[in-house]
Image 1 (tube, rainbow, N blue to C red):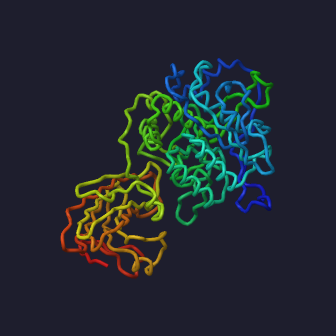
Image 2: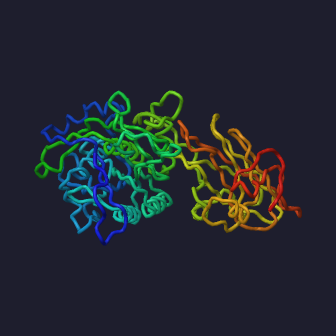
Image 3: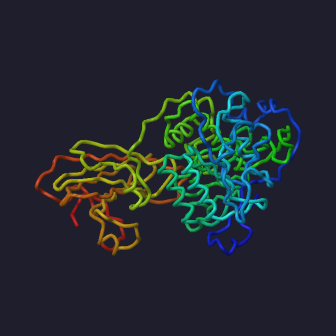
Length: 489
């Protein structure tokens, strides 16, 4: 397993992180056709792709580079647009470490498996050199480059212990561009991310808006080294994964086997690419929903090792596209203003609905545009056993800060009753873009809650104020006392 070993180069202020791989690889000779009989492919119930009628989806592999001549990658690598952000420069089509080529090979195998069907186009974005070390700045630059090239999926088989705003901002930009970001959960085997009083996480798997993948054996049992946490969304085989080796001769038949969540993430990326090849109109949210809802589940719902369960290729391919969600909440107030509003300007009256992404954010905001005198009735529901609260913030509310002063200045009303459902009612005293927050009370969960939120607005009237909602007291910093009393601020 690679970890964060050294300080970054002087020219880069971001923390260094390593490429993620749990065990040393083994290199050997094997016929490429024999790959289809591997246990890890049987575990996801893999079958070869049929004839490709659409353009292969572009998948950006941010890693140590990709050797396009490796077995299984012929005709599947976009060599023209390959790019390197490795410190000191590098060649994205040379992979001295071998990790990126393995990741790309797994993606290509799952996405197609037949030489006549490319199935996927791999965009090599080199963010690490032979040592496997990179920086948050290089990762972010690689993500922005993938956005500029209109990649549909970004694979991040990386691991580090430091959270970087630079990386999170880049991931947010990718999500807003409609890109699915898939990341390895990590190989420490720890279960400390999201646990009260500890919160030691591994990134990029623990970032918001990332589809974090845990690793299992061929039977679907979580590997001991696979990192646990409420951020883990789904699992895939990660033990003894076989793909073409960068260390073989050009066009040769050399292969490697590796174990870890890097490989598991590549499997999920391959499944997502297979779905996109069949149905190019699917959004990133729909891809996530399909894979999670069709995964071979875990007892009692989502768990911290395997998320929704083991990804299942034929079930995912057979699933109907889920509801297209255009009113997705965001996890911070400024960011919500860059997304589709829950209630848009020009919406006269009626009901709009939205829902949280399949990964968990404890607080999410949606824009609700209200005219003076319009009454908003907001409702949120979450799975039983969880607690959801609603808050309404003034137009122009900045990034959330804990404390009573911030609440006194910006908070209008809140509904903080205990339980899996809450309703907030408020009549707007002025026209503007209000922010509706849905907050999950408490972070220590064995499952990842998902909620539905709806907003019903009436025709404007001359009366303004709140009704049927509890406004948090000044000393609570945004936590009210419950009940049905209300007042406007």
